[in-house]
Amino acid sequence: PPRSTLFPYTTLFRSVGTLTAVTFGCIPASFFFVLALYLQDGRHLSPLSSGIVFTGVGAGYFAAMLLAERVAARLGRHILTVGAGFLTVACLLLAASSGASTSVALLPGLAVAGFGIGLVLVPLTAIALANLTAAHAGAASGVLATALQVGGALGVATVGVVFFGALPTGGVTHAFAVSLLALAVPTVITAALTRLLPRS
Image (tube, rainbow, N blue to C red; front, side):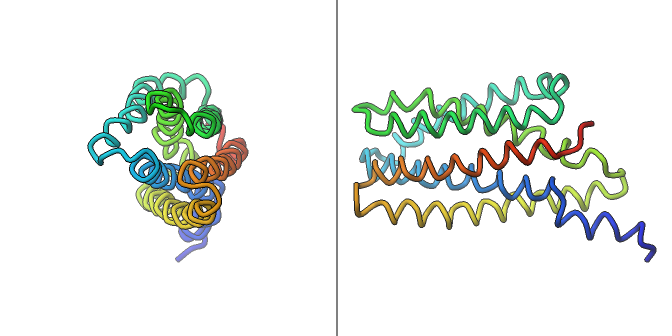
């Protein structure tokens, strides 16, 4: 096949958009993983009660879904930077409130986390693939979805090591806080990578 046909497929796997998807993909899956461990093993909540606490994330995500299209129309790729910034703030808020006596103290941080995830995840595909032709959109979308899944697997493995490594020294609450600080790293990297995505 001519080089023009092969080019999009060979470069997608090393593009900034794919790297951004891998880096961002590390965050939601590993965040939910350590949050579930913290709520059930640290706060001794039942699965149902833990699910109710998780609605804080859902509320923030729902708000982001309502606003993302309009915000993206004004900010373009910078909406991803803003979303990653919200995620960084959420990690710090939750780390600070992890030792609170009530789970209600977690809700602001959880809502901010959901809002940040939504601001990145909703427009990510459109922005990352902005410069590709319609003929390659399907394959490119598949690569991006795969990158998100790969990032999720890497994130759970890496943050899981951090969580269980910190567990013996300070218990579940300490391990959760340390994991959140570790998760702040890919949020900052995601914010930096979004500056290199297509402007259109």
